[in-house]
Image 1 (spheres, rainbow, N blue to C red):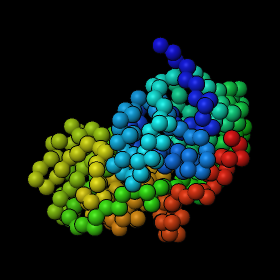
Image 2 (cartoon, one colour; image 1 turned 90 degrees about the horizontal axis):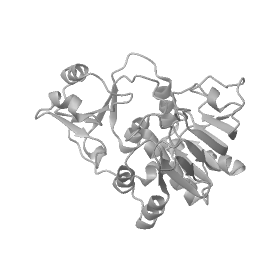
Image 3 (spheres, rainbow, N blue to C red; image 1 turned 30 degrees about the vertical axis):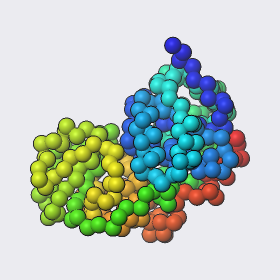
Image 4 (tube, one colour; image 1 turned 180 degrees about the horizontal axis):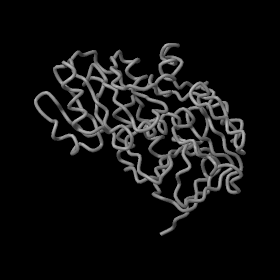
Amino acid sequence: MTTILNIKKYDLVFATSFETMHGVTGHIFEMIEYCFVCRRNGINAAMALLDGTDVNLLIGLLTSKYNFNNEEVADLTANIIVFTQPKIILANNMCIVDGSPRFGSCTIYANNIFLLRCYDGELDFFSNNKAIKRTHLLQDFSMYTERYEHLDIEVVDYNKKLLWDRYYTPKSVKTNTAMFYMMNRCKARPPAEVAGYIAKHSFDYYLIITDVPERYRCLASDQVSVEQVPIVNLFERFDTYIYTPVTKVDCSPRFMVECAVFGKDIIYEIEYLDPGILARQRGIDAGVDTLLLKDNDPFIEYVNRYI
């Protein structure tokens, strides 16, 4: 079985780092949304699942979260690459949506790598990399102070956007339900801690969404539901998002923006200042339209300069 992935038929391929499996995180939605907008603007783009995430999960998200028409779904589906843990990648250009160099022992040969910055700030891997001709780090300068003058990479001021105008619009319902987002990689909290938050508040119902439902089954009751992501019609299931501590900086929280778009409240159960939350709040305060991924987004213009 070959370990070489040749994706040079594409102008630009979106992927995540792949030392660990991402599954349902904000990064899979970033892949979908940026790939869609690129293809709509004449860039021959694709999505690559390199971390072991199930392709059926990705296809399911295309049809359950977004109001893409049949042609758009077919186009995106036809341009999904599935290749777990390659050892060599031959590409024209790639965009790593989690901005991480965690590729195991894989060597990537590419003209350009575009990094959408997340928490990972150790980027020496990309500097003077003989296999990658040029690396571009796109990060929000109001959030990240590093400029990496000591590294041979391009550093660009850019704020990640969401394609929220193509989501299914939820029905306007009131259920007096609070939602917890307990994803294993960086948002999971101990069940006892979650029980404390539930005892603290007085909602009629609580919804815990997670990729490890067995961890929270002990909290399930007539009042508390525990469900596996992804959740269909999620924004019809809760009124308030209870934001709990994360293990790393929340680099570009999407739920904050989605809650603003769909009129959901947020309660912050944290005792620290997270620069990602502050950056998103500034964007929301400026108007959610500033966080909408559009055809004229600076990402499209920047990428077109190099591909």
